[in-house]
Length: 343
Ligand code: H2U
Ligand code: ZN
Picture 1 (spheres, protein in one colour):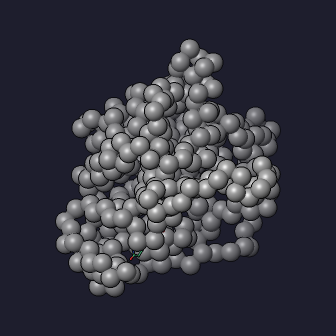
Picture 2 (tube, helix red, strand yellow):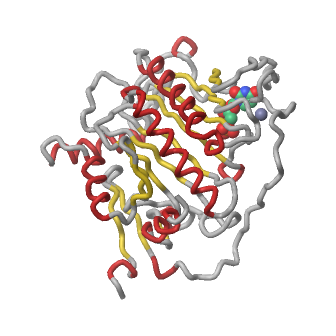
Picture 3 (cartoon, protein in one colour):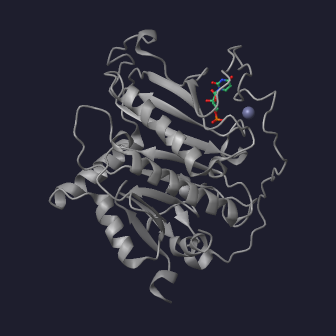
């Protein structure tokens, strides 16, 4: 059996976790669930959509007649501002095994466009650039606040991902504490930098990938799109800065356009893969907005799409994945070659 056709596990140096790869299983028959596919044409404006311009939201607030990107405070925030949250004594639950802390911050919804019927790739590079500009503005504002140490930008796309509304939109959740995934990636990058004279894990990783060209899907001067060697989801990708950029707020004019172009390329290729508006969870990972320099950090985006072999068959992260470790059948190289043909 060729080396990579046999079961093996791969290491993710960012999170310091392993993924099990079982290439020989890819051909097994599928008699399981098929997702419903929604192909209904959407109108440019939907009077019943709570994100369309001029419409009323659930709580009665009216959206402005916005013409480009529009951000507003989420009406159902997962965290609340500090002045609405009471302090909590460290031993509130009477045991060191029952730890809790108050969490504070703010959640916002970001409408990517006034057009109800468009998705990110359909906004084109200029439209996505406006989204990137809003992301930068939001992070500049919120990152400067002393009560916020991290700003998570993300998009949940598609019913299959639990997205409640097809109107193109993302969210941001900004919190006092650094969330778990960011803490893991900070530690992974710190450990690598410490062992490699201060080098960046992801810049070094890109250099390795660029030499092999097997998993690199697209590059411009500022960003590269790559199927990570350690990818977990069938068609998972990353967009990685090719220069030292710790936070999205450091991107200059050309860098922001470079990011928009990379986002347009990969999302458009995704849509071509199964001839369906491709569902995913995606988001920006960047250095915390705390008081540290975070030289170890390189900003990047993750795309985690659930689809496996068609518009209606998704990968389930259950059983062994929930109890032991993530596992994949299709190899990252097979996924990369299929996506590469569609770029
Ligand atoms: P999804 O991206 O998961 O579909 O969520 C949309 C967000 O929009 C969700 O967080 C918010 C929900 O709280 N929302 C409002 O802020 N106002 C509304 O009137 C409806 C939904
Ligand atoms: Zn709408």
